[in-house]
Image (cartoon, rainbow, N blue to C red; front, side, top):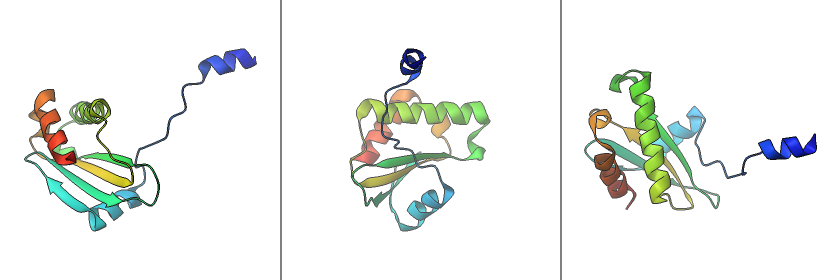
Length: 115
């Protein structure tokens, strides 16, 4: 039984997601803002030795499948480019028009924001 359970376990990795509304609200209020044409990045120094990131996509941008596709693209860009630095918390906010961008155009804007 133990062998079967050990096969099902995945690699443990640190959880870098912001989950609670109060964390998002704090970063919106206290964070420094940096904007591009279609995205806004809020940053706040963290008390811990890791980073946490949240992605926010408004309902006005489209139906659920459109919003989820945009979130998946943003997460993948962040993962591929290894962008977040330690000791910071981030909220990446998608604005009107970001759902129409190609993957490469999104990548350019996200890289610019994280510089």
